[in-house]
Image 1 (spheres, one colour):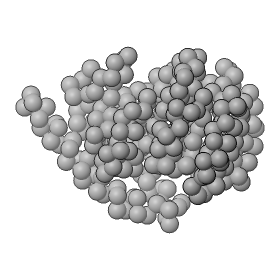
Image 2 (cartoon, helix red, strand yellow):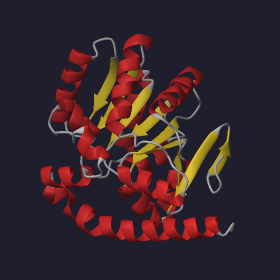
Image 3 (cartoon, helix red, strand yellow):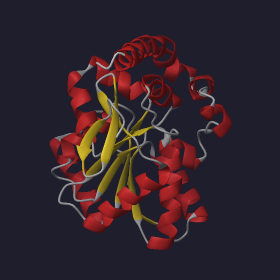
Length: 268
């Protein structure tokens, strides 16, 4: 383990960025862990977080949300910012692993292993398009169910019905597309009641796979300009996050990384 990284036991190794531990895993390792959890069928679902600067910045400003990130069973760097900051700290993470790429890898493997998915979030229109496209491209991947909750706080009865519906589906992985930080809080709040092996927050990925939102080309994302691509696609939704929160995150993240690197150089 490199100096300064967080060891969580069981072979898990993380790099701390603004107080949150990002896992140092590659795509194959991430998929292997998810497969092991599916085989294990734990009593409560394993929580997988997939976010870049946005989640780290929310966690930096909100200690309660940061605790959710650090309690997660796997934190994947969806975005280039944590990869660059980890490298600057002298504790490289490897490549970024976007949530959409994790989903694609899962669907490919599900074709061979019979895994199933439940999709919770987004609109009925997006979910219908998502189902149609997935069934066409991955016909042996079983879609255990989809559900579009209303865009308002649920009543206790509605919430209980949603959980019962998910649990009855027998899904191996629950993909939650409520947007960050809502989806991570939702998973954390419902972990003790959910009976699926794995729950993953995937933000806008339902829109990508449904074809209703165009995903950034890999070369743009790898170059660090996914934020600019998505801002151009959805300016009203993302302008504040990218143009105000983004620079603030970079200031704090860079300052922390430089200080950490200097302390390492002095042996502190």
